Image (cartoon, rainbow, N blue to C red; front, side, top):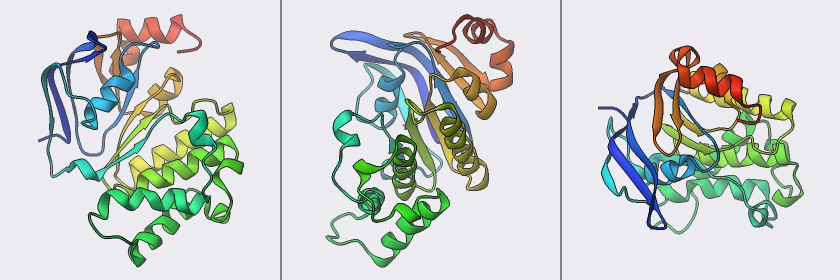
Amino acid sequence: MAFITCRDVSFAYDGATAVSGLNFKVDRGDYLCIVGENGSGKTTLLRGLLKLKQPSSGSVLTGDGLKQNEIGYLPQQTAAQRDFPASAYEVVLSGRLSSRGLLPFYSRSDKAEARENMSRLGVLNLKNRCYRELSGGQQQRVLLARALCATSKLLLLDEPAAGLDPVVRQELYREIELINGERDITVIMVSHDIESAVRYASHILHLRREQVFFGTAAEYTASAAGINFLGGSTDA
């Protein structure tokens, strides 16, 4: 069975349908990009995959040994979160909380995992720096290291490159590609950067308050939805 399977799923927001007609699956090792205009239901879907929101119809199933506490999540940052008064290391280490259960203290292996993920993402030298003093790109790498501390199976990323300059944005996308390819961690990412989505992702899910397209990135670029979206918007 796939990691995640959506069957005839709809989600509502404030009593109105936010997104409907979802029928797709994500297998181990996939890299799925969810694209669409603002308000198309992308973040609502991510919340549903995290079981933070229940579907108004249909079913969201997990399989292939995936447990809910084995999902790493990088949400969109708020202004308050960017000003969080903790060290970069403390932020990353907090990603181990979901695996701690009732244990009150971080273990030696938790701390080693945090340091290892910071090293992989090139931010170990920022270990003792205050998170709010870091640049936008550094903060996102710290948050990605935190998400990796929660999983060896599945990452859910909500606009991880939003607000970054083009060079830093591409560096972050390449890091995510390496995480998917070299560490065999499945990735589901919401992105407005459609050109990078089709360059790096294995699969595309296009939403417009309903499922417009689901398939491989190559199939998407040849589809009517992909041709219109790629050619019709510069800020998608």
